[in-house]
Length: 340
Image (cartoon, rainbow, N blue to C red; front, side, top):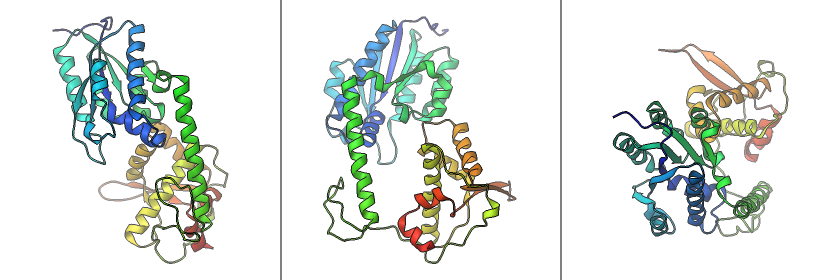
């Protein structure tokens, strides 16, 4: 049976409840009434779809609901949303596979459904969204922009994206942003006090430390840093954007992990594996935007990228300029002392 045209007024909504829940929890530092925020988004989304002339005949929400602080199944049921309880782990959102299976089943068994709405944003969903589009189905994605993969957004187009912030009232968004700003201030103050060797009386998530007690640090390999050849890097300039600094911080972190694991100084970092790390760190950007950030770091003299011969294929590595001012700022204090 041929698929319905895009003029079909019927929609299926697939809600990665776990994805939205944990984004709110982590990004806004565990605000109270977390489930209410997600439910508000779902309620507003249905209203928005109705304004577009779409009737949400099918609505599924996915999560390991037993792991959530409070159970939203009753409220979802009253909204006409069927729940799918999927067992998860601490490291992987278990909803992905079940959601994709259900979306495929609906596509093949319900030709009257012309629009598929995904409330999530992981790049893992790109294959299923591409398949739906090839089957002449309209695809919409709703989520927080910071949590939506840039690659996914590039696939569907900005016109098919609904920002979850626009689905919350102005007052609710202000509450979230105020909480995030306050928690960020406390975290920054705690970091500053730790660097000074002082206690942090308001550090979130733990009891106050004894005055003067040094903060625990990750063990560092012994020995001074071998100076880099300045001539091998581009002329220094300070980094311009927060994304550039985040990328540089990610590079420094990967060097530190590698050195702690190998217990020796590491001179280079493989580019291919690092790009996968950067994809997880800067999910909101597209692949070419992430690669462009590396080019900007190279042009600023913070890193250089070398191509090397290898078997069976050549490979590229990142070399970090430890003399660059932004690198010096982003390094942990104990690392700076080791280079003094």
